[in-house]
Length: 308
Ligand SMILES: NC(=O)c1ccc[n+]([C@@H]2O[C@H](COP(=O)([O-])OP(=O)(O)OC[C@H]3O[C@@H](n4cnc5c(N)ncnc54)[C@H](OP(=O)(O)O)[C@@H]3O)[C@@H](O)[C@H]2O)c1
View (cartoon, helix red, strand yellow):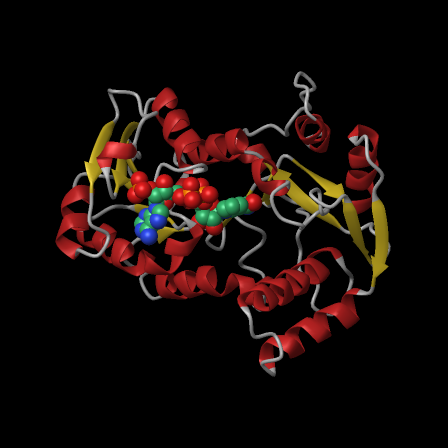
């Protein structure tokens, strides 16, 4: 494959903007695709911005003409809309496509069985039908530190509560926006080196027990911890999803999150690899994350420590 020079990024949001800036800094010719140019405030003036209609084949194909790669960073709610974008990329002869997902090991069959993964798995299946027409791979970066406090995955930071699966020694990979942006920039130098459509990169791994120690150290308030059995919780959650007893949106989300957490951290039959033992950091030249302790709030300080 000849060198990638022109890169389009679809959706310069929370994850996309740092990728756009890093690609630009590294010397790629970057084009941002957006539904509305009016609200894109933080894009340097020498980066191209193209307004597109994601429901229009011709709008997307026209915007993608001349691009070597397309990095999709669209919102989670837009993941399942990506087939049109993929078809347009192929029509415009884009060489490389990276779908929006940036998650755990989404190529692992047990991770793919997770209800929360259905939209990203759907896109991978679609891409598999196009693999003679475009090079594609997903980027598995684990949990992103900028989001780790928002949802009760590693720990429930809002309620200062830890649900420790099977003793709390289960670990996950963590990354942050900067590391992900450097990985995207690095992989575009040798996209064909990616094995089995999966790039794995992380800043490090952390167990629930270690995260709880750090959180307690920085919290002025007490934490509670409860122990949970992953096999029992996984089975109960999946049953509630299949027999309809989880019916409200809150119940559905709760059951999917419990299934995901128990399978990620626990040692049940459904456990999937969520702490990478052989990430691609070395060949990418992407270093692990170092801690930063320069800011004041509890979450910021925990954030810095978790990054260790
Ligand atoms: N590993 C993790 O911890 C983690 C956490 C959260 C998210 N993620 C993944 O990262 C990806 C990006 O997340 P994010 O939080 O950065 O997204 P975001 O900021 O919410 O949205 C990114 C961009 O998507 C575009 N967009 C929104 N709705 C769209 C639609 N219906 N069709 C097309 N584009 C739409 C918007 O751009 P315009 O308005 O300019 O068009 C928006 O700026 C998601 O796919 C998600 O799966 C990973």
